[in-house]
Image 1 (tube, rainbow, N blue to C red):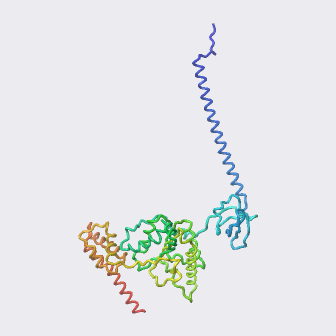
Image 2: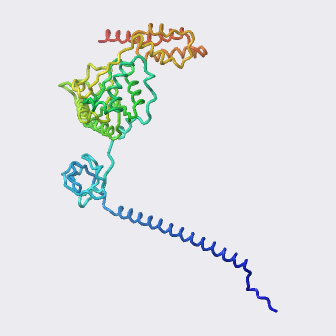
Image 3: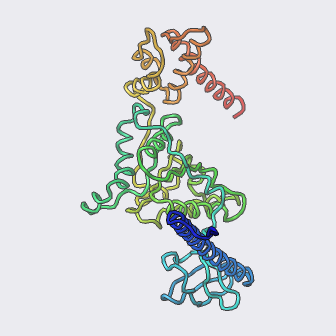
Length: 397
């Protein structure tokens, strides 16, 4: 009898059927994977074709949007050339079409085909303080009244604008801090920027003075444009007397350029909404030389004097600067009495110098004697310098 080798047992048939089902699932998975790859490659091909089509397009003109007439038309200007009434491409977002915007214009039809980013001087972008200052109101001594006025004028309108709307008054546009050097004007502005969740732009007045005609005015305009884009924003102009000095009838070319910068600053402060999210703080040591146009209401509405600290103020400042110092037998009231006429910066220098005296003697604590020596060194050197300057003026006029 011949054995039939082709005949399979029922168990072998079951195993073979299981194998075929598993193989079918594997093939179905491969098909789905290949279909996904096909769709991805088709999208990539479509993107490359669009990119090639864009590269084949002729270059566009850069222009400025003057006015939007309706949903389909606008008035544009190509540099300083003639103005044209042109069409707006359907893919352009209407929210970005505002007068003054930079746009790309088709060479043949002059239609608006793209919105371009705003052009700004790199130095203007460098004015923005990216990291929030670490100084807080607790780090400032003897200026409680001034801090209160500054918070009312700047912080309150930014945090609670509805209060001014309910009362029916406009909040101040700007605040001018004036007083002797080293009394905390810049420190107050930094503390305000720390407390308010706003963009802080710091610029020194002399940085806005430029060599070529119109450059300073352009920087001021771009500075305020940046502030509006980053709103809520606080603009802090230190040493504003560099561009805000009283204008004279007889001026040189350089003084005329400074005057142009000042006039642009006045125009920008007049141009923005007082209830908006842009506030201006300026600081100066010489309020007597500022132009009256800068100080009128509607520009700097609040003038805050930051004077030399009195006895109580000096004591508070000393407590601020010595709170982390290891003192032994030091009476800060005596130090405050001996430093009459000293500024906040002088008191900080005295505290630092007292610590240096202790370090020189390899001590881990600071004594009253260290502070007395520091007072003599810091304030004594200032008096000697003032005497030398006075003597020089007497001798050489």
